[in-house]
Image 1 (tube, rainbow, N blue to C red):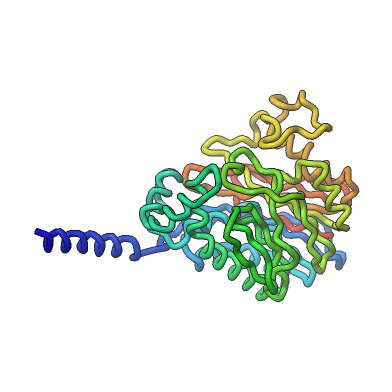
Image 2 (cartoon, rainbow, N blue to C red):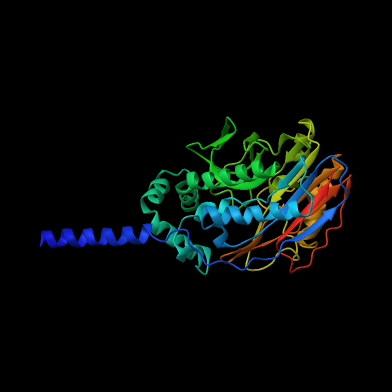
Amino acid sequence: MRRYSFYGILSLVCIYSIWAYSFLGNSPEDKALEINSYAYGKDSGKGNLIGVEPFMTPGDYSNHKRFLEKTESYLINAKLSGWITDKTIFVFPEYYGTWLVVSGEKSSLYTSPDLQSGMIYFILRNPLSFLYYFFTSQENDKVQSAIFKTKAYEMKEIYESTFSALAQKYKVTILAGSIVLPSPSIRNGKIVLGPSSLFNTSFVFGKDGLVLGEPIRKKFLTEEEKPFLDSNQKPGTVIDTPAGKLGVLVCADSWFPESYSNLKKSGADLIAVPSYINRGQVSVWDQTWAGYNGEKNPADVDPKDIGKITEAQAWKKYALETRAARSGFKNGINVFLQGKLWDLGSDGQAFILRNGKPENVSVPEYNKNRIYNVWL
């Protein structure tokens, strides 16, 4: 009887191992959406900001090759448009790298009807690592924390190798959009992970493929982020680039006056804001604004706007376009992640500040995959 029990357990282990480690990172090919391009101004030799608003699906994150090809498609488009110079800066949106958490998983995860169902497949395939981080996590949301810590190294490797390779290949500077990683730091131009808190962090890659400056960690977290993310002490980081000192504010950081004061003190010449609005299945961009999420309203916010103006109008009035100009900045861009990630859609449309004035960004609703070129 004991022998049969042993062989029964061994059989189950073998079946599980075959299931867990075969046919990973495979997802049906999605129909490629046309990349729509928009340009502002003329080349004066001072460089340019190229903002990317990519339309992403779960399959785009299924493996390194898919992610690299999708990311490179925007640089190819810009090159064919004649936009790439030795002072070009690409700007990718918030959380662009975060969904790499699902890379190398079972195809059933990518085709799940909703994110929650997909994460069940994730946990079943990574039970030991997940349970370890679940029980050792200090975060309030132990599930999300454990999921990201389980895949942190793989996420970092794909993210870093992708943007490092593209920055070298096209000889450009890339603000790579944000990714959730544990206590990241920079050592000799490479990303190094720490053992503790998770941060929503962006990195800037130089032409040599190395990371420029320090990690750009988000300070002002939303209510959805607070249970599993830690926050930076100050909002905004300034990075030296060939086009000048680039000030970076991760999404909600762009809604606070102190962010622009910090960038001014650090000598920023231009601003980039990577953003992401997780709207679930219902669009919020044209819905009434519910007020600040996660933090108290700054003193200059009109309380009468809450519940009256739209989400889009609130971004226009209280984020980059108005606050940067008011603070004396001349050039900047705010881009948003687009896509359909399981049951989560995304909202937003770029805001552009050029020569101290806002550009009129008019994009048809069906154009969900787009890039913007802003000559400085």
